[in-house]
Length: 286
Image 1 (cartoon, rainbow, N blue to C red):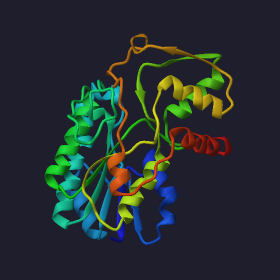
Image 2 (image 1 turned 180 degrees about the vertical axis):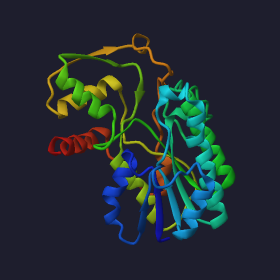
Image 3 (image 1 turned 45 degrees about the vertical axis):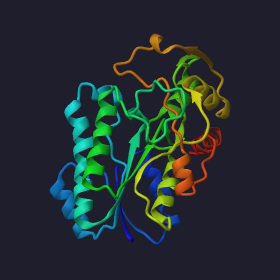
Image 4 (image 1 turned 180 degrees about the horizontal axis):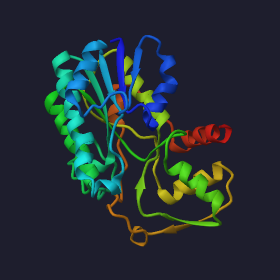
């Protein structure tokens, strides 16, 4: 394995992969975003993979605007299902490896114990349904693929909850944040390292895996930690989901069980607060 195509390279995860690429000099990287390569165009994708002798694809591209997806169904499925099918079919044809990133939204969020990979999926939103359709399309076309589901992704790159809470915390005296949705924040830099571990591991073990940072919290707890670590003085008030109406229902509980990826790929995962501290230090120095 030598030439690695990374799609969606300008997003949070793609940006973090660019940061650590130099730590793995055995690979030649092809970082692309939609401007350079539209993965929903199968002919273009196939031509790009053939011309550049690609050995593996890491698909970070996704339509992630959860509320907008409810109205923009066609575009959402084009990116999250059809483009993923294109990758799978092309990968099968050229016998190359695929790592694809999926989401906790494939579950309905009604559980009370962490979700394992073999628990029943039941997405409730267009976004979640499109991501599940992408998983199914990929595994149907190229069962030798690795799918990594993650949750509550943030980074020093792009737009995310951490940067929003820091900005609003400095602009306002008080904020209302939901306390009855429970999950695990995931620093995209940690997920990027996990992906590179999978790529460099001695054995290729296909299938579905879960990855988030360790621990659990509510969005309220997350916001409080962000402000504490960033030394921001702001009164954060806990509110219920019903008091913050959105177009799309969010999972009330979306904690992922990471035992499988830790066991098979021997990955050590930090606690979410440790990773948050690293991210906030970077943001403070930028």
